[in-house]
Image (cartoon, rainbow, N blue to C red; front, side, top):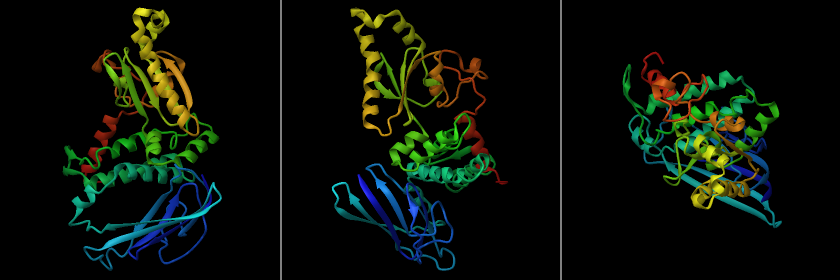
Length: 366
């Protein structure tokens, strides 16, 4: 733990600081490296942070200047330095300096270099923080439209396609997961306030703005693990097709840990098979997700809500509301009942979302 921290950001002349989003307040320190276009807590190059822990993370946003009037010379590098002063829990005053430099690349001639260096996970979290920050002062539909516009622009810039031909649209591996993150972000409690009280929404947004990359991604797109007799526990798609009768699912949303028993597994447990010596393997199967959930509960702060439910249970809604509704009551007969659990919802699936995104990305009108 650390207390009374101050973050000072310095940049080379080609960059300006647009702002920061995280557990910080502005110290209102002006300078030549401060941009007039504010993103988050902007208008300064220094921020105050009252408390730091190993997972505390700030998102810092920058602006590239003089791209057209004074082109950046090829082969040059942009530099950023982070200087953090803080008091350690041992009462020592410490300073940490981190300096990074990256090569400049021309958007017109070196687009593939930019594409190869793109970190889609970090980009998703930074865009999510910006969206959540805007949601504090703007209407929800306006924020969703802004996110959609940014996603369409990115796909138009880095996608490979023929005009007016959605079937030709392709994204490289460096961008392939980004639309999926945006799909789940749009459905998250950070932007959807329906059925949440104002203090619940504030609680979710507060923790999202301070957690590190890994935990933030879990909040955006929860992790789903499958336990069955067919092999060791494995991660599965966050999709309704993963909800099978002979599976136990463990979902980690960061704020909740959900254990879900499939229909057949729940019936076996009610019949008491786990108490019979000849079905000891079933007993171990039931215990495995409980042990894994306990490890997460002990290690995470704040402690997640623990939910143990089964097929048809009232609290199964926590799982059903998070998975991609690829199978709903509308296409149940097209998919067949044996491949997964249908979700009673009118929300669009990831496939419908992607199909619409491709149409807009290749359209000349957008």
